[in-house]
Image 1 (cartoon, rainbow over the protein chains, first blue to last red):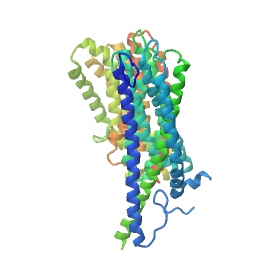
Image 2: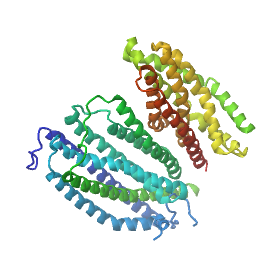
Image 3: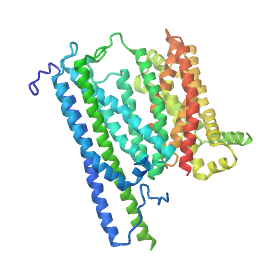
Image 4: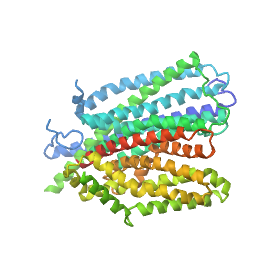
Length: 68
Length: 244
Length: 222
């Protein structure tokens, strides 16, 4: 009996399915959050370093200086 | 705000920072409601409680296809309009699509074991999902193998669109192949029509999954934009150090 | 037109050379077919039953072999730029290269198939059926492979990745190729049904492959 519900003879499969869903979705969320923290820290480090030297232009996404 | 404005990374990050909490909250609410509905859903007369796996399996399947659709639209953005956000959108969607495809495969396998007696059967839907999973992995490999992000985006875009064209053909072929080799008895999972008492939890879970996808997608796009900014700054720093 | 013919001849000459991929393709086909009984056992009845499938799988894998150098070599040494300055549309150029690849790599597989069918105890009717389906299917494999080659053209060792990208796309060809061969051998389905679908897919692949590969190459050359 899981959470007061009788899941029948195949309960293990139902529970496993929901468990694996939790695992995979949690892994996705953790990856996105951890990646965010990592990039934010790197950016903070680099921008602090950059402030010590002359400012560089905001070069957008790919590194090329967009003119328009 | 025209779409090109979002190409500015700072503006995108500001927008993402503002939207994400709301998206996240909506996702949580949807899952709460969906899981509650799934909990109280009646058992199938044929399959018993195992039909509750459907509330995970079917939304995963929908999302696995939808993610490729998102990648395809992004691919058009990359190839036709060169919108820089398109590259980021495509790259961020790939791992999400792969994860949902994997979830679909595993839940399908767990659902199949009580139904068909084995963990894997080469039925049309599962086999198509397996092929789709391989295609996602190939795309992710391509993203990480080509060094220049712009070039990678364009190569992946072509492949994504070819894949989008081929996916219906693959599904049709696998279906055809499956009926060719199908043994006499076929379990029609979920029954021929889904009763409304099970349709509503299914739809709510589908909405929850979709909201989760877009939340994760937006967050992953923000991360990718930050990653590219890091790469730019690193290259500039290396340039400055090496050039003088 | 002469530019295209020159390109065709050049590509074919390059492929036929020992390092070019054409002889290696057939050799690989032979080896794969030879390996299969070691894995499955020498039961002739079983081999005859799955013979079409083994031949198709061998041909599929052998087709992939020479692909990764198909366009990469030309991009690296600048030949592709030369071809473009000749005024030839890139689409036609890649199509011609694919035709050259098929003539030197795909067609030999079709010719080799009946001989290898002997090894698998296939009777003449079965062998003929397999050869015919390979004749229709190998162009599809070449042109689908062309897409993978174009997309991985900038990679130094893109061969394996190319295979990973291309193989899922070739599944319909495999399904209908083997189905057509088996339909001719055991029936009851008429040969024409899967065969016409196979031909349709092949035609679609030729068109889609040409345009997709040209687009990918164009982007890679920027």
